[in-house]
Image (cartoon, rainbow, N blue to C red; front, top):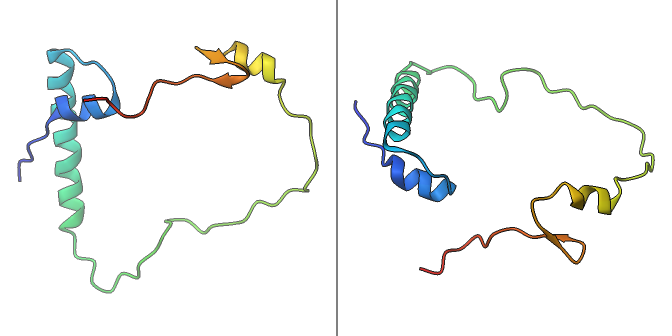
Length: 96
């Protein structure tokens, strides 16, 4: 079943700029992924117990030990933008 994907809208939501060539490539790749997902959904799963993880989960415990954290100034020096000891990020909502 072919699925129409609005790559331009997805790119806008992800805040990435794509050329027409890149959008065509991603449209084709996403089509293959969605076709595969449709095939997986069509598999007979009656009698298969639901699971949240394909492998057994094992808790990895460690001692609760206080360790020094990274130096704030050093971390902020690696940020694209920082002000008054905080990261500056672009607004998450458009003003449209």
